[in-house]
Each structure stands twice: as structure tokens, then as C-alpha cells.
Figure 1 (cartoon, rainbow, N blue to C red):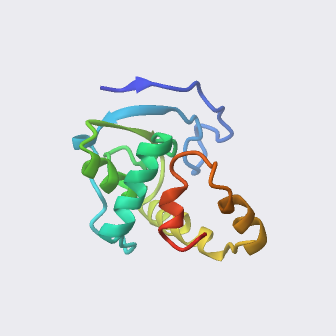
Figure 2: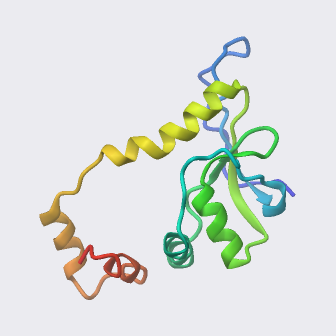
Length: 147
């Protein structure tokens, strides 16, 4: 089942370009149609998968899983595992088409590595987490020592 959620994001790559298609659409796909990449070097422990599942329960499944034309997960292995843990039948995905094997692997690595370079403004983070009146879901962050 492929139910379209959002409209097209617009294409900036031509049909004859070696770049992937950027006609992005978020659709729901049955979870059994997705195939985790066994060569993905990123590992998610049980605790982190539980945290991702808690976040999905608290806020919804707001960040789609990226897959290629064959259903291979490019980015979102943790979200995939959390969805399985929650027993979800369908998940939101974005199908990225037109990637060479090298580009697909580079995208998978970049998706994980780029965020690692970011830091935290500790004062702003503390101000965000100190108020007990925060919405449900912040507790999953408190459990990790952010508060």
C-alpha cells in the first residue's frame, strides 16, 4: 500500500542528471516491504531503540525512513527497529531514486555522521528541560541525563 501524504517537493534535478530525483513524496509503506541494510555500520542498542519508540509514541512518526527503489533502508535503521518494536504495520518513507551504489552508501554514512559534529548550548538546553510543565515525551530526554 502506498498512500501519498504530502505533495511533491519540486524537482531540481533534470531527468538526464546523475543526481538522485528530488521529487520527494512521503508515503506509507508496509514495514515488511523494507529491507534493512546489513552492511550499515551504525548500530543501535536496545536502549536507544526504546528511546526512539518512546519518541514516536509521544510525538508521532515525524521523520520518514529513506529507502532506495528496492526498498533497502538508506537512513532510518533506528526508526525502522523502533517501528518493529511498536508493532507498526506501516511507516512513512521517502523513496530516493537514481543513486549509484557509491552515492547510496555515501548518503547513508553522511546521514549518520553529519549530526555528530553538532554541539549543545548547555544553558539553553537546561532552560528547555527545567520546566516540569513541558509536554509529554520530554521525560525520555530526562532519562538520558539531559536534565
